[in-house]
Length: 68
Image (cartoon, rainbow, N blue to C red; front, side, top):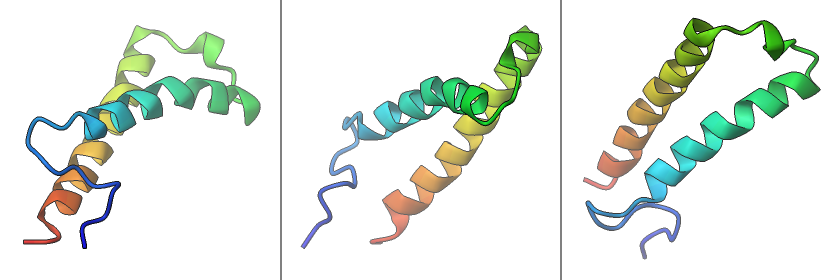
């Protein structure tokens, strides 16, 4: 029985939605933790986005091949 939270087709955008949600929700969570994100420059924001993408890419790749 397939898990309903795993993508079922190559054109399924569930993974991309998870990535976008993670990037968008990070900065408010940082502020709640007391991190001053107003000092973040463009380079810092790109770094956070890239690291989030990298973690998502590896995790999503493992999830997509786990049933193989």
